[in-house]
Length: 97
Image (tube, rainbow, N blue to C red; front, top):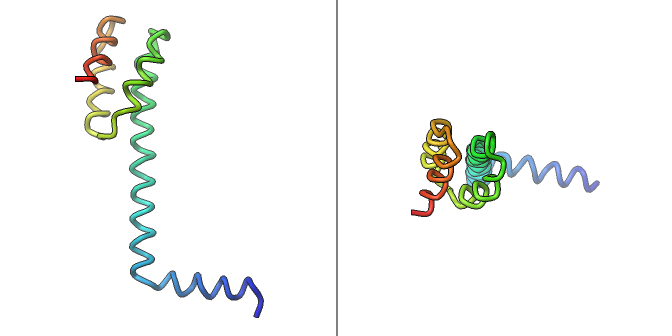
């Protein structure tokens, strides 16, 4: 029996196994959620440095520690509403609290 055929048969069997399928689904969901979290985090960094490039390092340091999606969404809104460098810094520094 050829190696490709054995591999194909194993994949066929796994594709029918509910435990394997559940593990794969959970992995996809985790990957999707992490990608979404990274997207929100990057949007927040972009907003923070858009007009104040010297805040990028602070923004990346503070934002990288946030894992909660709701907190990231709120941060993006707060940064969007900030118009001065002092307001942006205040929002970023408040992340430590």
